[in-house]
Image (cartoon, rainbow, N blue to C red):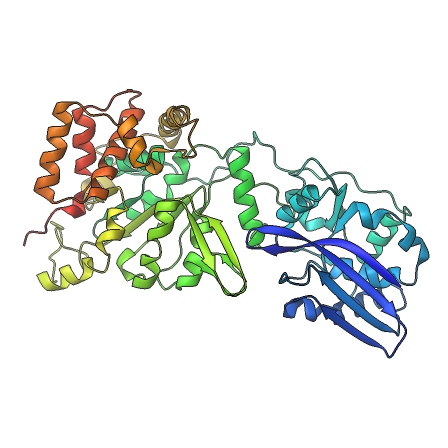
Length: 514
């Protein structure tokens, strides 16, 4: 007997339709899976055999061949367990073969040995694949139902077990009600991080506001304990709420990575990723024989924070250059190629020297000039050029920490977010006919159109370029930052104070003095 059941397999951050063809014929008992299956799929034979028996069905003592079509597409994961088991059971049940359910619905799910349907990766893109291929709905694990429910055009049928799936397919059990997903208007969760808790560091907080408004990259330079990590972790609190499209993109990425908790719906908080400096190149950028998203993709629509920036591997840092420019990353392998989105704000932090106390009035630096130069040269010039804002973060005086009365009250994240949101709306209106969404992504042609300078601004910028020896890329970065500063003030034109402030945020372009 021959049965075909619709399913899907992940390829990058997309799910591609797969037909699970099951043929049960006479011959010596054998179980074969063909169609470029990975090891997880090949091992499914034992899971399927045990699940069928433990659900009360007889496993056929015949020759079983399962073909995963198209045969030239490499399949991975465990989502094909459920459709394969259904195909084997259908060989002995005429009513299943005659049912139109296999033509109208897509099936996916991992089977346990007792027949329970377990959580899978990539349920949301799989539901999108079901919609795109014309299916009426999708059968999937109950733990994945909330995220898949974001696709409103198709029916979402969550199941707990193989037996429940069969009973619903044969209409012996009513279909469960549609699961709920996160509302588009749901407020951000309160994680307790607020800029009002940060004492001092007004210039650093101003730089983070500019970075949030224009999606600019930023580097903090300061001694240990000056608050670099504390400041960076509060950046998401001043970023606007994710739109529905951004929430969908972010959820798809986390779903493919297997980071969606059971019962969780759409992600509404902007990602904040903080990998350790020992991370490998592949874990940071993404890759593998079957390309998987890395940290730069996990931070899409959010923040990627690299603490102890010079301690990262040079090879890992250098591959950041391409996604920082193009806002995506292309992973090419002999058998597969994938393009992952990587539109994030890069925040980095480093000490001014190996001991961390160069320029600190409270501690003596023990590093030589050669050691400091070697330490800073771990970050290449081309990579540094792609970071718009360079901020010195000095140590906070003890009096401000001990005596709160003398410390200037910090502005709350809620108030800063209002200005950031207004500035971003101005950018979106300006770029509504462009593919770019913020000032950091402006092209050279856009700079000429939206960053016109008067003679006073040009003279100031030319003087700074000559004095600091800035590159052409640094020149464009200054213009983009100045454009964002003007947007925060809701000014249509850039003035000389905007240029001057943007120039001040190029600290690492200045020569060290000893």
